[in-house]
Length: 91
Image: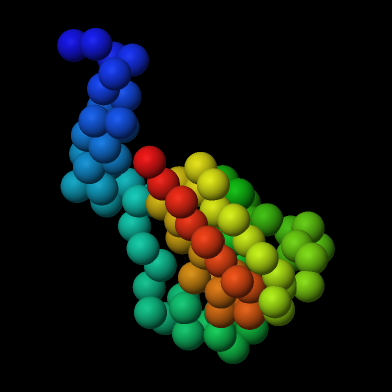
């Protein structure tokens, strides 16, 4: 297999396997987490045991956010619930 030409297929296969195993970074956020974010109670994970400090974020209402290499993209609905205008790209 020519890996340079098939990296997207390899990447998709890995993400599919992780998703089948319910790997944390491939799972969507829950409806409850989204509802809490709409009510102002939210957090975005930096690592499995640490969240991003909220002071690292600018005011989010109307802020344009590009999710590039954003893993499973779980942070995008949380940021959108805060009024950010989110775009998420993937391979």
